[in-house]
Every structure is written in C-alpha cells, then in structure tokens.
Length: 106
Image 1: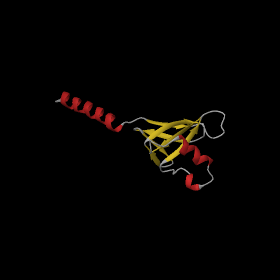
Image 2: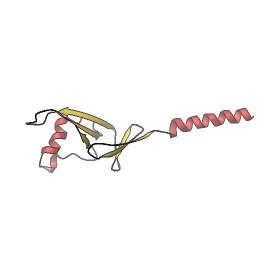
Image 3: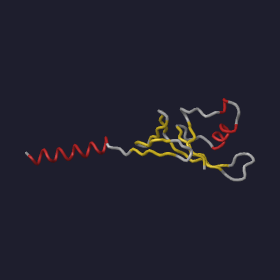
Image 4: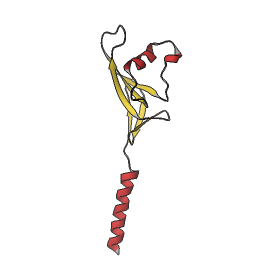
C-alpha cells in the first residue's frame, strides 16, 4: 500500500511540473523595455504577444542596415511598416501597441 501511494505521489509531482511549472524569463533590452516570456508568450505592459521577431532592412538615406526587434501578434509585420511608424509624422502610421511594439533597435 505504501508503494502505491509513493507511485501516486511521484506521478502527481511529475504532472504538476509538466503542466504547472513553466519557466518564466524576464529580459530588459538596451532600450530599457522589460518583457517577460512564459510558455512561448511574451508579456509587456499588460499585453500578450505571440511572436518576437527581428526585422532587418535599410531606412531611406541610411548608410547601413538597421534591425528592429518587435513583439507582435502579426507574424507578417514588415520592416517597412515598423520603420515608417517611427519616421512618419502621421498618427495613422503609428503601430497599434495591442498588435506590435518595438522593444529594441540594433
């Protein structure tokens, strides 16, 4: 009977760790943005994002390429969309923070 309870206890601990114990990783970028990664989801400012993407390209009149690191729910966001959101003076071009946020520029 004791072996039975011991086996049940080990199985319960294994299942708890498998489904309830997930690694939480907190990262602060060079831009000072602090986000948390848990279970493949990125959390920043009480918002959830599915993807962390690096977008590389060249802005107009730039000497070299730039890389934007973004958290996004739109895996098809482009370098041009992100760079234009920074360069444009129109608020219509700004990124929707529920959809995409820049966390670092390299």
